[in-house]
Amino acid sequence: MTVSFHRAAKHHIPAAIAAAASLLSLTLAANGAQAARAPQSPQVTLADGVVEGVKMRGEHKDVRIFRGIPYAAPPVGDFRFREPQPVARWAGVRNARQFGPRCMQSFVAGKLDFRSTTMSEDCLYLNVWTNANSSEGKLPVLVYFHGGAFVSGDGSEPRYDGAQLASRGVIVVTANYRLGAFGFLAAPGASSESSHGTAGNYGLLDQVAALKWVRDNIAQFGGDPSNVTIAGNSAGSVSVSAHMASPLSRGLFARAIGHSGAAFAPGAMWSQEQAEHAAKAFTARIGAASLQQLRSLPAKTLLSSAAQPQRSYEPASFKPSIDGHFLTESPEQVFTRGGQARVPLLLGSNAQDAVSPGVAAPAEPALPGSGARLATLQEKLSVFRDQVDEALALYPGSEKVSQSTRRWMDLHRQTGQAPVFYYRYTQRLPAEIDVPTDHVPPPMLGRVHDAQVPYALGNLDVQKRYTWTAADYDVSRIFSRYIERFVKAGDPNGATPGAALAADQAPRQAGSVPDWPASRVENQGTSLQIIGETTHSVWDNPTSSQGLTEQPPANALAESTQAPVVR
Image 1 (cartoon, rainbow, N blue to C red):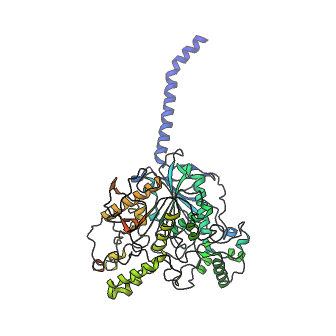
Image 2 (cartoon, one colour):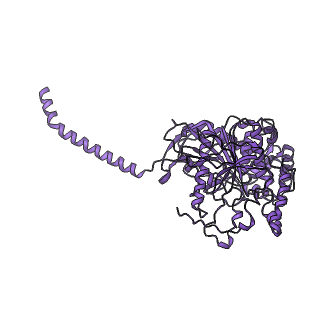
Image 3 (cartoon, rainbow, N blue to C red):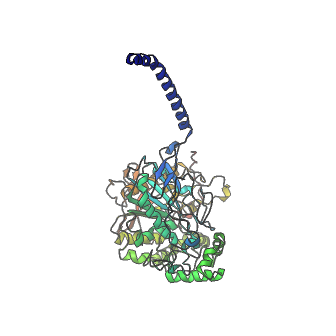
C-alpha cells in the first residue's frame, strides 16, 4: 500500500500543482483589478474612532487630507451657549473626505470663498493636511484660525489650504469655531450652568478644544504635539494674541504667528459687565425671557436677529470678553507684567491695513504712541492737497489693526523673553480675473487687510481669483519659506540662522531668502522686515506714516508692467 500510495501521488502531483497555480493566478488577478479600481484611502485611528481621508494627486501626491473631523460635540440644543463638550465615539470608519459645515454667519467680511457646501450650527470640525507616511513621524504642526471679525469665515477657504506647507513637512490644521451670537453672546443664565460661573467666549473656548484635540491626536498623523505653532489672520490673529494671554491655552503651543490683528486695539474686548449688558439688551429686543427660550430659537432666527446692526457699520453686537475664565485680565495687563506665554512670535501687518470692521465705531482711547503718529500723518497729508477727504475716507482706523499689532510686538519684545520677528507687508494684490479695467483699484489700494494670507501660506495657485505675476510668486516663495522655517525652528531664518543684520545694510542672502533679524529698538527706531517685491530689513520710526505715504500720489495711478503668469 505504501508503494502504491507513492506511485499514485507521483502521477497526480503535476495536475495538483497546475490546478493550484491556476487558482492562485485567478485570485491575484482579481485582487489586482480590485486594487487598481480602489483609490488609496488613508485611515487614521483617533481617540474617538477611525477616520478615512484622501490622498492628493499631482504636485502634492504625498499629501494626505482629512476633512471634517469633529473635535467637539455639536453645539446644539442644550449645548448652545455652553463650553464645547466631548465628542461621542463613533463605530466603524468615519468619512473624512469632505469639509464639514461652516458655522452660522451672515455678514461676510470681504470676499470669502468657501469649499464647505453647507452652513450649520453643528460646525465644530477641523481639517488636517499631512505628508507623514505613518504615526512614527515627529513633524511640526501649524494650527491656523481663520479671520472674519468673529462673525464670518471658515477653515475650508482656499487661502488657508494646507497642501503646500504639508508637502514641505509641516502638518497643517484648520479649525472652525462658533461666530457672532453663537460664539460670543454671554447669554443670561448661562453662567449658572458653568462650573466656572462665566458665560460667553464660546468661540475662543472652541479654539482651546481644537488645540487639546491636536495635543491628543496629532501624533496619529505623524505630528509632534510638543511642537505646535498657532497662527491666524485678522480675528484669528486677535485670537492668537488672546491665547498667549489665556491660562487655558498654556502649554498647548510652542510658537505663535499673527497677521494683522491683536487684542490690544481700543474696544477689541469687552469687560464681562459690558458683555452681560449687551446680552440683556439683545434678549430683551428679541423677546427671549429665558435661556431655554434662547436655545429653542431656530438657528436662522437667532442669526438674523443678531445680524441687525445696533449702530453704524456694526456687523455684530458680540465680541470676546474678559470673562474671568478664558481671560482673567486684559491682554494688555497680562503682557505688561510678562504673564503671557513666553514663546517665539512672528507678526506684522499690511501697508494699508486700515480698512477693517468696526473702524467707524465711536472713538475710544488711543493706543500709546498714536498721538505722535497722527500728528506726523496730518503734516504729511498736505502732500495730498485736495485729496485729503478722499484719503481719510479710504484709510480710517489703522488703530484697530496696524497699531494694535505693533503694540503686541512692543510688549512681547519687552516682557516675553522670547524672540520677536516683526514685518510690514507691501506687495500689492494684482487685478482680479474677469474684472473690467475701470473697476480695478489703483496700485496704492492693493496692500489691504488680509492681502498677505495666500502669499504667506503659499496658496496663490489655490486662490484663483487674481492674475498672479512672477513677482507675486517670488514674494510668496519668500514669505511662505519664512513661515515654514518659523514653524519648524522658531526662527524665519531656519534652524541655523545667520547673524542678525544691521537694519540699514543690504540684506544678506540665506538660501535665496533674505535674512530676517529679530526685532530690536535703537535710536533709529524699531527694526522690521519689509516683505514685498524687494524684501529687506529697515528701521521703522513709530511716528512715520504707514499706509497713506507708502508711495507718493504721483505714482498712485501708475500701471503695473508685470505680465500675468499662466499656471
